[in-house]
Image 1 (cartoon, rainbow, N blue to C red):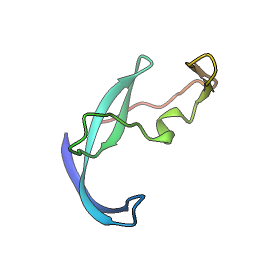
Image 2 (spheres, helix red, strand yellow; image 1 turned 90 degrees about the horizontal axis):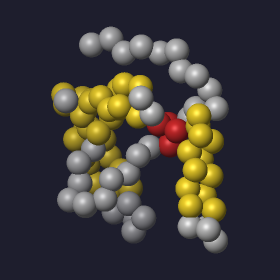
Image 3 (tube, helix red, strand yellow; image 1 turned 45 degrees about the vertical axis):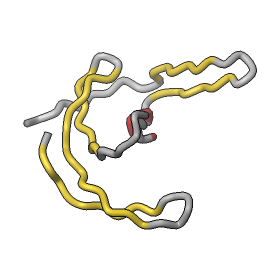
Length: 80
């Protein structure tokens, strides 16, 4: 993981905060991907929508299920 830059974010209550952004790598669906990482005090983990750009993401609220299905094959490689 390496520091990249500081980014400003506006929260839902209108407060603007600055957070350090780091570069890191994750394995998602069997593929290594470079991602931007922001740490918070929360115990929850959030992922950005760009991570799901090649997937169909379906939420069935009555059944309380989530389905993630790959729709496009990635041909990208990561160089470090």
